[in-house]
Amino acid sequence: MRAVDVVLYGTVGVIGVFWLVVFGYTFFSYAIAHRFVERRPFRSLVSHAGWEALLSLFVQPLLPLFFFIGRRMGGRKTGQPIVFVHGYFQNRVDFVYLARTLSRAGLGPLYGVNYWSFGRIERSAATLARFVERVCEEQGAASVDLVCHSLGGLVAAEYARKHPARVRRCVTIASPHGGIAWPGPVLGPSGAQMRSNGKYLAERADLPWGMPLLSIYSSHDNVVYPAATSAREHVGGTDLVIDGPGHFAILFHPKTAEATRAFLSEPQDALR
Image 1 (cartoon, rainbow, N blue to C red):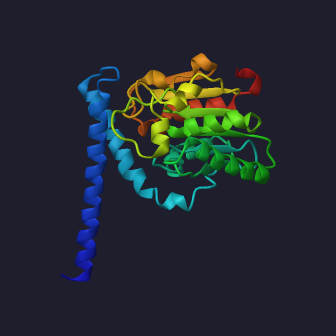
Image 2 (cartoon, rainbow, N blue to C red):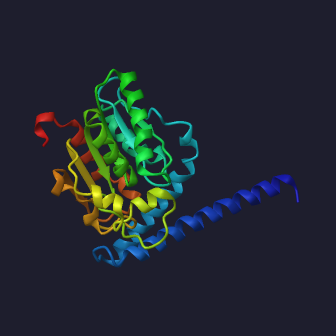
Image 3 (cartoon, rainbow, N blue to C red):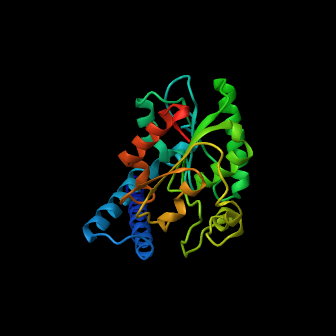
């Protein structure tokens, strides 16, 4: 067999395995989540599950590239800095859509942090702290806004409680503030800390944030459920529930983008 054939078949094989993993994981996660979320028509379930899988197929192959690029993700050259904080087993690539939307709205400058999401949340918060300090120094800013996905919301909470003066506002998207009910294994110390029955969140879940907070989450998240685990109204935040999208797809939902843009654009005295 020629070398070019080996490369071709190997590439096709890798792509095929990737597709199987994505669709297999999506099907499996939706099957488990089914008993924790609101019932919905089968057509709606298939549509949202398919969209979740397709977005993963297109975006996740870019994940290795965004270990090297994406520290600056667009936006104005000067202004209120916005830092994106990714979730478990991910990096800043997940915010490509939100970064584009906020850039078009004239917000920013926009930055994306990467951290080792398997480690303890406290260590990830320390990584975020160093990143924010560099951003503030570069921009001559006193504070940043944080836009977070999933585990990133818990990292942001840990950071914000230790450095409240450095965070002006925070948006969390599909973050398990009250812990995850996922019955399967989650690797690393952060996985244990995310458990709803764990000590880490039991000590922190009801602590106030001390700054304006918007929690956006789905009524049908296939990873973080039940939906009430993302609610923050009872600690002074604002909740926005979006019907339908999965854990990854909510990052690409127009309502998520518009709510994030509006919240970060509001005059300070209009927010509680």
